[in-house]
Image 1 (cartoon, rainbow, N blue to C red):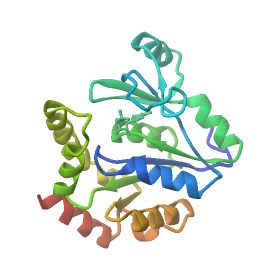
Image 2: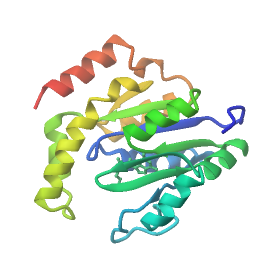
Image 3: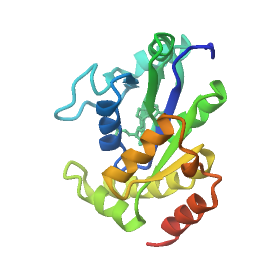
Amino acid sequence: MSTDAPGQLFVISAPSGAGKTTLVKELVARRPDLRFSISYTTRPQRDGEVDGRDYFFVQSDDFARMIEAGDFLEHAEVFGNHYGTGKAQVNSLLYDGHDVLLEIDWQGAAQVRENLPECRSIFILPPSLAELERRLRGRSTDSEPVIQRRLGEAFGDLGHWQEFDYAVVNDSLTSAVAALTDILNGSGLAHATGQPGVRSQAEAILQRR
Ligand code: 5GP
């Protein structure tokens, strides 16, 4: 994949329950030039989800064929299902001059950073571990075993925040959207993971439960 496209690629990752989806929707609403990449997944479609809007829902053998054909910029297994970002879609958006947002897990983010080092990656942290658990439990669609598994995975995912260029705490929608907007505008230095303030805030969140 070429790296001289006029658009900028942003990658957002967060543990399940950190509120990432709401943030991403807000950002896309505020930045009409920003495009959200629609992922492919083998996960079953949930109520209210639309094929081609929320995801491209595909069968496992189709997904495997796409891997074989090199169609993915990145792909990963998350909660037992496969997810991937279509290379062609992202490439054409970037060449059209759009900034593009990928909302993917940390494994996929690591692959994108390797393939396209000029991307900017952002990790969303929950305000606390207790709040993360509360949000995960609040999802009526999930059964207790699913919640337990998601909690375990979410706490594990949090350990990857330092691999990202930026970290944003989703304590309030307004402040998190403001921080993300700064990052998208190229003025997000205060949120860089190397900043001592960001580091101590993240460490405090990860220690408290
Ligand atoms: P959900 O099934 O709840 O929509 O998403 C589950 C997880 O899969 C989330 O962490 C989400 O960020 C991640 N995910 C969604 N699309 C992709 C993708 O294209 N690639 C990767 N690596 N992860 C994805």
